[in-house]
Image (cartoon, rainbow, N blue to C red; front, top):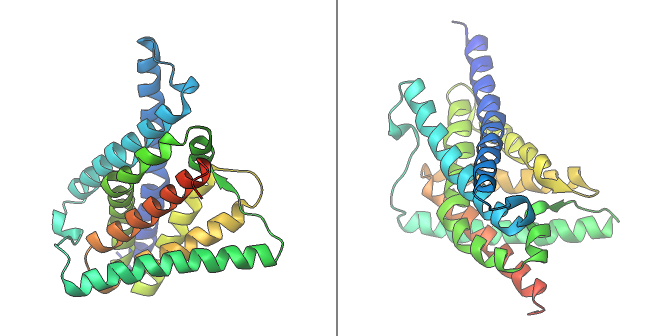
Length: 242
């Protein structure tokens, strides 16, 4: 097998993992919603319940389950995804990573505003604004499912698979692009490309921290904390707490 062929296969696997997981997750959510409907629970009429259910089924069940299946299919052990208790250096990277993501968000928001551009809104925010309690539920889920689940898939498997045949920098960039592109399916309003662009930049930080520390716990905690801070801020705003 030539080097080009192996690279094409790794890229194909990364793309398949990215979009296949979303499709499978959506199917699972639809099936569970239909089953709940059969028992009298109308999920479509309860956006907050559907949001929480989707988070559990997508980032938890689907991402976790597919990760196990992928590793078994390729006959890889779980050491393919590097996990360990954070040491002092990792903790420093985690703190720095959280600060970097928040700083980049502030800077990008100001740049977007100065250019007169708009950024699309994630449907999670839309649902939360209608029922702020959803934000409170998503805060712990950010640490328990969203951060770990998304980092396991996009950094652990997607970036890890690309890293086998590509230079680390290229693997980080491509994995970040795939991660950002998947957000298109959860956006509404104008400025979708602006939102995706911001997600891409933030993903570069997560990918870099994983490559630097070789510990998936680091980007998972950074990701979880970043989301939790955003949900906390959104809750306070929605309840006039700010």
